[in-house]
Amino acid sequence: MPTPTSPKVFPDAMSALEGLMFDGMTVMSGGFGLCGIPENLIAALRDSGTTGLTVISNNAGVDGFGLGQLLTRRQIAKMISSYVGENKEFERQYLAGELELEFNPQGTLAERIRAGGAGIPGFYTATGVGTIVADGKELKDFNGRQYVLETGLVADLSIIKAWKGDSRGNLVFRKTARNFNPMMATAGKVCVAEVEEIVPVGSLDPDSIHTPGIYVDRIVQAISEKRIEQRTVRVRETV
Image 1 (cartoon, rainbow, N blue to C red):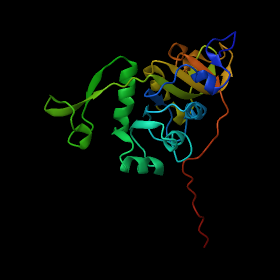
Image 2 (cartoon, helix red, strand yellow):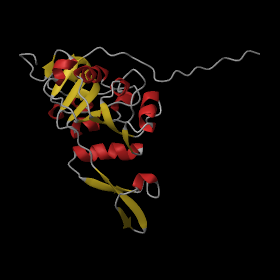
Image 3 (cartoon, rainbow, N blue to C red):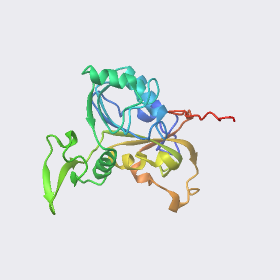
């Protein structure tokens, strides 16, 4: 339940999602790789047992972490993504015909989400013309060049991750975590934000706020695990 003084602030991830989850729903999940993912909200979605999900996310997490947990428990029926190369369980399910995939060029996915949040039902882009990305989609000629029609995306629920937020839901993101999270906040019928720190109202510089609180319905402060998706090291050569 929300706190008495702040109706948007919830004590934990599970209570923040209470009443919002149902089988067959569409969920937008923010982040880029493992950076800026709403890991506590994903874990709560996992524990809820909700199934038949369509998940819109740049990537599918990794095995055993992030969205990979939902894949392991077979809670996801369809992914709308642009990069899924870090998850062996995703690969196994897709090749076995157990998981539906709608693949998007990364920029197209970002624009589809932004369009959905802006109330734009569709737009034309040259990206993907002449490839399987354009199969079955409308093509149109503009000034002698072909473009493919892509549709805007809207989700039943957006779960996102921010660095700081206040009790009114104003959010600030850091660096790579700013990819996909702000636009997903606008494209969900309901938006729940997980933040590293909840600060007093008025302490955020208005010019530094990336997502205004009007887009955020619920907010929860949660401890995050700073995982590294791929660790690359260089062996120092000695002469």
